[in-house]
Image 1 (cartoon, rainbow, N blue to C red):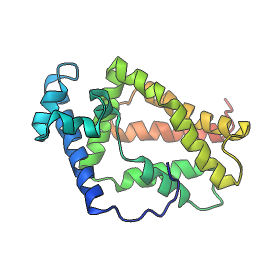
Image 2: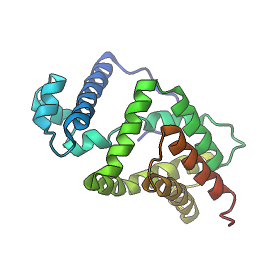
Image 3: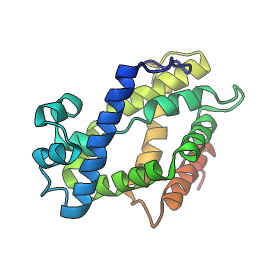
Image 4: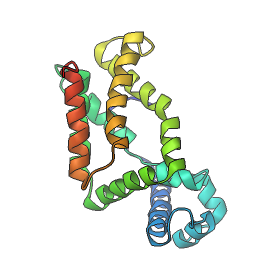
Length: 200
């Protein structure tokens, strides 16, 4: 994944693909809400999105991926790299999280909230999220390395990245709470505690 903060404007073809992907995901979440995740089939999702099953599979390899996918990584990367150089990696991540979610439209925030609740409620989705840990740690390590002028494969950098991801996951698997605001407040508090030196 590119870590460049300045991304060129997507082409018309890429924008159309993004709209189709979003339509499939919106239809999936509507069906998950109406009839449950387990009862919803790929064929039903494709039909609701007015695409063929083969088109569905061009965008998502499985039903699980519809629930797990989001397109926020490029936004987080750009927001992280735009933070002032004087901030520590944890401070930069906290600020980037606030910046990204403050700019999301209300309907997208609602879908992110629904995604978080669904992932925690479905055992196979929780396990798939854990499977993605390596990629999450690698991404954070690369961002920290660029910020500090070091290498992503250094043990200290990977440990730092692992601690940051672990703090976030601890809050995610503790439950999303009663509101999206509470959820993000807990994640921010976990990162602040990590930066304090874990002093109890």
